[in-house]
Image (tube, rainbow, N blue to C red; front, side, top):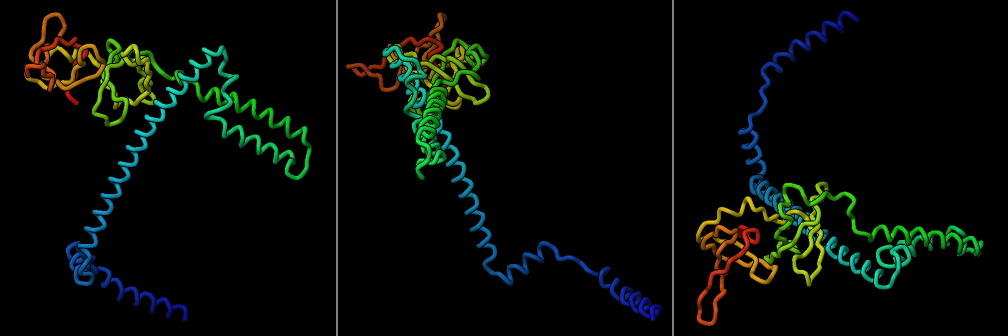
Length: 285
């Protein structure tokens, strides 16, 4: 019986092998034809799915860009708050550790205190003295953490003597995608976060900005000596720190560019030339 089973299995395999040899997988064109015949709306549905996919990708990129812009705005606001706090502390003669119980860390203080009270059994009538002591210790730790969190972050920055900060001047956008550019002095550049720290060149402003490098254009003298007549540029208007669109007339030998600012007519309707320092000029954004 065993010999008979083996013979039957061999015979079945012999009859199956020719079928495998003659098997031919369908081509791409045949598959498309079959899909089109069985699913007439396949092509239109596929195009719709592809369009939706591209729309989702675009929305995703827009959300990421919006988040980056919001982060830079928050960094600027936090920087101003830290500077104002430090100024008030100096005026009042206080140290940062004694006045940093509010602001950023207040929520953490209340949350930690509530947690400590619950753990000590205040809700259920536990040891009141133990809970108060624990709450006081957490308040102290949270105060210290708050002071550290509100201090300006300058540990990872590099000096402004890098090749990209020639003469320490730059044109900056204080708000992402803003058409307005102002003149600022580079204080430092963080090569890890790609963030610049700059001060407004307007002495009356005394503003400090921490913004991403995409909003900063270092003003390099080596790039500013080949302006040609009629070239559209942005230049700092005299007696201001703001850039305005202008047109180049010619470059002088003493490091200035003679320009005519757009819409800068006088009472007689004439646009006069103005001499602008070479490093106060940049290409039109």
